[in-house]
Image 1 (cartoon, rainbow, N blue to C red):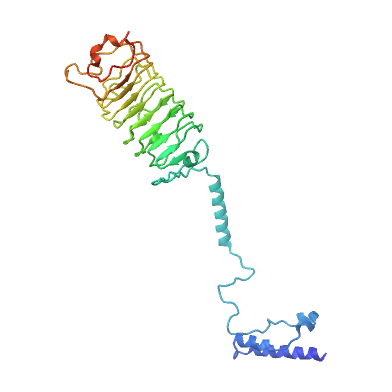
Image 2 (image 1 turned 90 degrees about the horizontal axis):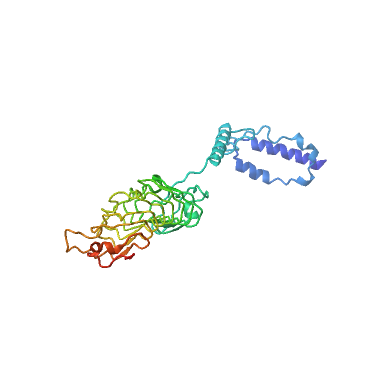
Length: 328
C-alpha cells in the first residue's frame, strides 16, 4: 500500500513538472528518467485511471507540422492519380507494339525496337545484323522486314516473300546490295528500287518475276536469272545509262532478244537457255567505226538458245572473245 501511494504521489509531481512552461521538453524527459519506478510491480488494472495526455501544455509542438499525418487522414487526390496510372498501364499493355526504327550505329547490332510482322520479334533479333549487313536467310518470311536505316547489305534468301512494295526500301540511302534469291516473288513495284541512290547489286534469281523493274544508274550487278521474264519484261534501253554495270545475268527466262544497247563497262552477259533466235551485226559492235573495240566484254553466254552464231560473224569483230553458243 505504501508503495502504491508513493507511485501516485510521484506521478502527480511529474505532471506538475511537465505542465510548467519553464522547462523544455528535453528537461522534462530527463527529470522523468530520474524516478525509480518499479514498472514490473505496477497494477496494470488501474492503468486506465491515469491519462498522461490530459492537461499536457508544452509550448513546443510534439509533432512537427507536415512530417506525420493523423491516422484518419486520407489523400483522395493521390488515390485518383494512382488509379489513373493503373488505367494508363493497362491501356499500354493492351495497345499493340509498333515498329520503331533505331539506327544501329557504326559496328552495332542494328537494334530495331519494334516487332517484325512475321515473328513478333525485332528484326535484328529475328535476323542477324553484323555491321551494316542484315542476314534474314531461311526464316519463312512472307514480306520484307523493317530494316535499320544504315543497312548497306540485305540478304533474305530462301524465304516466302511474294511481293516487293515501294515502301519496303524507302529512305534506305546507304543500301548497296539486295539479295532475294529463292523466294516466291511474283511482282515488284516499278519504283521499289529507284529511290536508292547507292544501290549497286540486285539479286532476284529463282523467283517468279515477269517484269524487271526500273533500276538506278548506279548498278554494277543485276542477276534476274531463273524467272519468268519474257519479251515485254524489260524496258527499252533499260541498261543504256548504267555506265558502271559489270555483270548482267538473265539466264533461264523467256527473253527472245538481246537487250541492247549495253554499256561499254559490261564484262559478263549471261543469256543462256532463253528463246533468242537472231542477232544483229551491231548488237555488240559499231558498224560505223571499225576501230571500235569492246575490250571489257569477255564473257558472253548464249548457249541453250535457238540461234546459230555462225550466221552473224560481223557481230563479234570488236569483241576479245567469241560468244559461247551453237555455231551450227
